[in-house]
Image 1: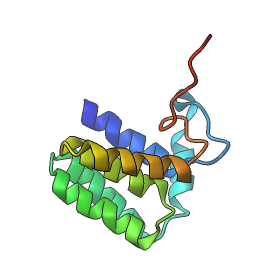
Image 2: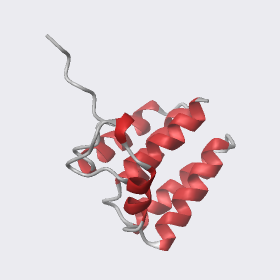
Image 3: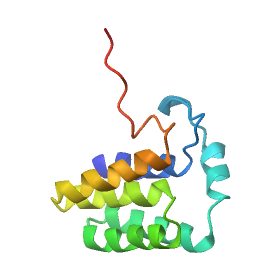
Length: 119
């Protein structure tokens, strides 16, 4: 079940924009619309990386996510995928670095930014 949520989070991160909405309100059409802005190469690596991650092939997923950022360094979903794969491989420093890069590229993404503590 955790793999499903991780894959869903990656798909949502792909559609993150500065005016990002809360997780529960994201519609499938919004996700499809976000994917229309992605090159076929990036979409292929994103799908293949997600499939490898779901199958537990974290090194394979990492190869695909790295290919995304080689093609487009500004792509938050690629960096978020690297974060997930590195975390699954037990490489916390590399995971933290990738998460910071994803956060810089998707400033409004509520899923990858911690909410401020309530007083």
